[in-house]
Figure (cartoon, one colour):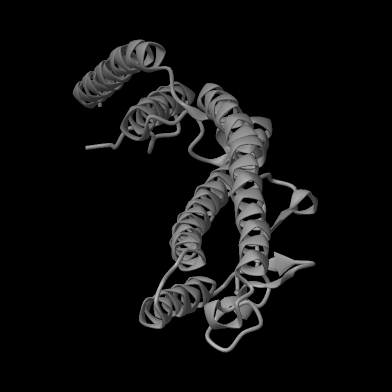
Length: 275
C-alpha cells in the first residue's frame, strides 16, 4: 500500500502538508495549555521573549531587595531590643545610685555597688556588634545602598563631658565609694539620653527608610508581575477555543488524507482492470 506523501502526486503532498500544519498547531495549543505560557520558545514571539526575560530579571532583583529589607528589619528590631535592655539596666543603676544617695550603711552601699557593677557588665555584654556600619540595598540599583550605623553602647562609650558610664564601676571616679553620686547621676543622664536617641534613630530608619522602600518594592513587584503575566501567560479561554479548532482541523486533515488514499487505491484498482 502506498503511504500518504510517498507518491509523486502534488495533491497528495498538499494533503500531507496540511496534515503536518494541523498537528503542529494542535501541539502548540497543547503545550501552551500544559505550561500556561504563551511563550515557550523564542520563535513564539521573539520580541515578547526579550521583554519577558528582562521583566523577569527585574522582578528577581525586586524580590531580592525585599528580602534585604526584611533582613534589615530583623537587624533593626534586634538592635532596638538590645537597647531596650540597656535602658532597663540604666534604670537599675539609677535606682541603686539614688538609694545610695540617702543615709545608708557601708554594707548597703557595697551591695548597691555590686548591683551597679553587674549591670555595667551586662551592658557591655549586650553591646557586642554595636558601633558597626551595616550596608543594605533596598532597590534594584546597587548605587542606592544605604548605611545603618549601630550605636556604640559600651560603657566606655556612653557618657559625655561628665565622664563615661564605666566610671561608675567599682573603683571608678564616679563609683558609690568615691562619694561623687551627683557626677554619677549626670553621667547616667547623658548615657540614657544617648541610648534613647539611638533607639529613636533606629525606629526612624525602620519606619522611613525601610518602610518606604518596602512600599515602593511591593508596588513595583505587583506591576512587574502583571506585565510579565500579560506578555508570557497564555489566555486560557482563547487557547482552549483554539485547541478545539485545531482538533477539528486535525481530524478533518486526517479524514481528507484517508479519503485521498482510498481514492488512490480505487483508481489503481480500475487501472489494473483495464491492463
